[in-house]
Amino acid sequence: MSAIQLKGISKAFGGNLVVHPTDLQVESSELVTLLGPSGSGKSTLLSMIAGLLTPTSGQIFIEGRDVTNVPPAKRNLGMVFQNYALFPHMTVFDNVAFPLSIRKLGKKDIDYKVKRALEMVRLDGLGDRKQSQLSGGQQQRVALARALVFEPEILLLDEPLGALDKKLREEVQLELRQLQRDLGVTTILVTHDQEEALSLSTRVVVLNAGQVQQIATPEGAYRDPENKFVAEFIGIANLWHGKVTEENDSTYIKLPCGERLMCRPNKVLSGEAHLLVRPEHLEVHEQKEAKGLNATVTEVVYLGQTTRVHMRTEAGLSIVATTTGGRLLVEGQAVRVSWKPENACLVPA
Image (cartoon, rainbow, N blue to C red; front, top):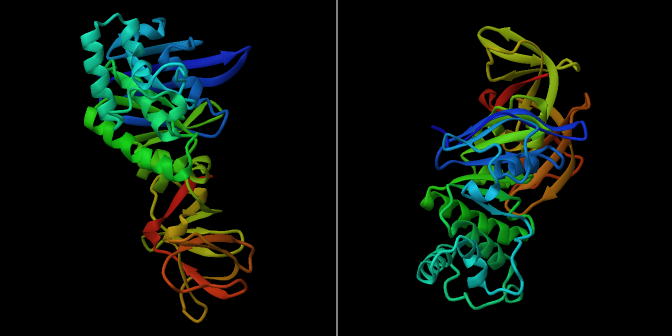
């Protein structure tokens, strides 16, 4: 039995279908991310699972129980929002205790559960502080503790780290993933941040314009995207259109400019397709070396641990590579670009 199951769930506002009929199964202890650009329907989908919106069609099951028309308070869900939604006049302790108070638990039970929840998010000793006395990361942990304090079956996270700066967001990401693993709570996360989705998830659900584009592991979505949208949305993509050909048990794609490039075999695809090579899989050589595409460096962007190199071939192909190490390329330099065939995959046109 899946922890969460969606059967043909959809949502329309005023005749505008913002979530097309969607099927999804989330297994116990999974962390599944709904990933997509603004307006893709991910928050609407999460709100229907939470009971904050009623589906236009379809059914929602939690632990095998049909909760499609069950109010949020009776779904045993914990939810964390981007803006934290803390009560500014309450202390940290009272904010975390609030879900227990409305469930009318006794003082002894509340004290025990709140203390344990604050320890889980490393905020023990800060129970007397007000929201104004907390950093952004601490406020986010209070919101997380409040969502976990009543031991929900499901944890729903709606852009929970969006208001944090990059360094703090990365720190809280690690803490959140470790906490989720330790507790084993089934979690659905909404984000538009590809790195966050890839680093946290057991699976990602990529959405666009209210439709599911792909459901896969993070590695599967990154290395083997099912369509052009997923390839371009997750990470940086070198994506070139051409015609698939087979020769001597090897797979090639022939580009309109005449270049013929070797790639990983794909028994399903034939005819028109895109070739995808990620920047980190490209090797940039000196011009005199024999293998690869001839190109000219057009821009070099220093990023600290890595350098992003933009290039263009004589035929007009744009290429982006990520390099490491001490060798510094310069604008205008002639180079050759190559890759291993197993790192080049075909994407449906």
